[in-house]
Image (cartoon, rainbow, N blue to C red; front, side):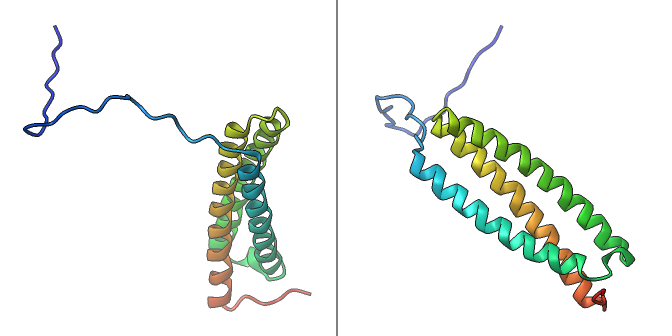
Length: 129
């Protein structure tokens, strides 16, 4: 046997209409997100350039951060492929959702990279030739 208890404020009246439809994304929304992703990747590339131009392999903490960041970027690549596949089908809702997921992985990557960069700066990393 199963029962339900519904608690409502005194005088509450339910509104008609039920659930609202979700957001419908457009090609323009998708293109705007992709632009953001490309700009985010440029920042990631700059941070990677800094890290790899220093003796980061001498710092186990940074090596671990770089490994995690590399994993996150791999997930971003998969999400990007799914976004592009949905966009090719003009399925803008799924394209937008996957593009946003792609960006989320990039944000994680950037965070890890910036922490690695800061660690190197604070612990006397040397630029390699």
